[in-house]
Image (tube, rainbow over all chains, first blue to last red; front, side):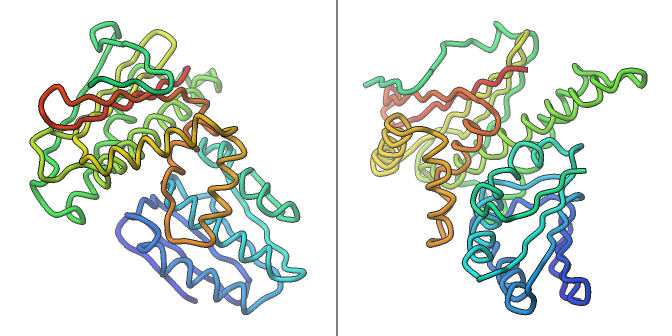
Length: 114
Length: 189
């Protein structure tokens, strides 16, 4: 398992389940600080044909984080036949508001809010 | 010089039922060290508001309402504080400040910071882009562009417009001898 974390957030890539789980509060200072997470996600895309991002426990994401996720979704879109699923929570308002934009970037993306 | 762009409503904090201001000196400690204060301040503003939107255990709508108001306040305040920290004149004397005013049916955020002449020109160019494009199309264009570059500039305002249905306005003035921008964001609650 690959893990990136600090006192506010955790991102874990569980290779055996083709799953990346985000939790906590992500408000890093710009795209460059998101680079390790982007690298982890790119690695996951290169290792599998389908991947799920579980964001249910991600309480907060700043706009640089939204840019980071968009960048990742676009790279997944560019990989032929790649299946991407995003799991969110309908009890977390930012997820209800903003995750649909990712689906607009990649219409084949499966978005589930529960 | 006093220039206004967007929907800049004249609102005095005393018009609201409650208001709160926080102010920071831009050059007091290095940016990296101050960055965490954005989150702390935004969380504080969001948490403070929850008092006025109490949850009632027998009414799920009140639970949702509190979560929505807190989330919007925290997101918008954090973006305004991050912008002010990244794009303010660190050599000036103007404090970065944020005010949150609770009105009957609206939340009003007012962020003030000093800027350099160059920052002012860049900011006005962005506002011009916002005013001359469909916000939804511009938002998707900026998301696509984020894949090509390491910049996420402007996305904060575009999420406020598109995802939080905010109205945005700006006032630039140099009455104090330094360039200053006041950003006003209003959302319905």
